[in-house]
Length: 327
Image (cartoon, rainbow, N blue to C red; front, side, top):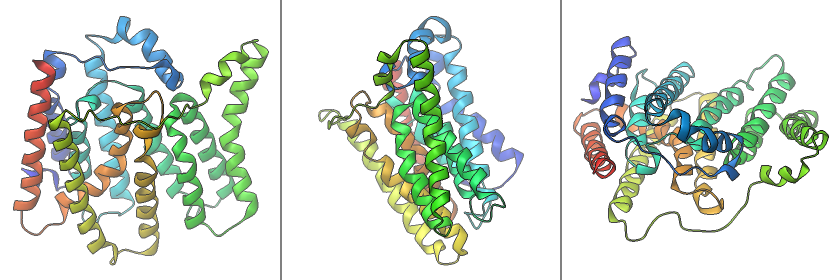
């Protein structure tokens, strides 16, 4: 089955669309309403106050499918354009779609899902830094996007250290460029706070700040959830192994791009454990780097049995998730 997604063709995109509908069949049988906390940013506030009345049950399932399809295709296109894979295909998109259907908390429209669009967008800006004829303009735009994404969904604050790391490894040190990036990050927050001050609503400022609390987002009694998390970890380790084998053959700029991606993954891992009002649904931000690395496990093995095993294990987990959501 995986061979259907190893070609860079319109056929692979069609199969991706069909797969997306099949693995999320529960949306048509029993639409799921995710838990949305308005304290997580502007997007959370909008979804909490309008999604139940306007989006569910008819619009939200199709909007969810459209969002994850666009995110999967855009991420896959980006990785192909950057030559981060030696062979062009849609295996990263395949991994992205399957991952969204494995964990129940990732199968509904949420602020975290929309936050993934910002994660992909920021990554696009970061890789443009190398060889940019106007680096300060690119850095300022990157900072604006990071600051705006933080206002929209608080856990995306982790994009700040990712952006700083990317600047450190992609460009030589120029102090003015670091100030430009930080100025861009602060600009949307400054404008928002100014608006609150002029409107005499400064008490809302504290809602723009993330709240931290160490906690365990996974229920210890949910064996299937631990199995799914373990399976995703195993897929990641396999993907990392094949990535490391290919990494030595890549030019230095592509290695730096992968370095930014792996730092993004490491920085994102604590999100559901440290943000007070975020549960396992916030971990959907992991999917961008996860699918990028797992895509290696689908693409590079010379024999088809390993990618097919990973695919069918994912399908079994997806079937269980759909069964749980529909019962």
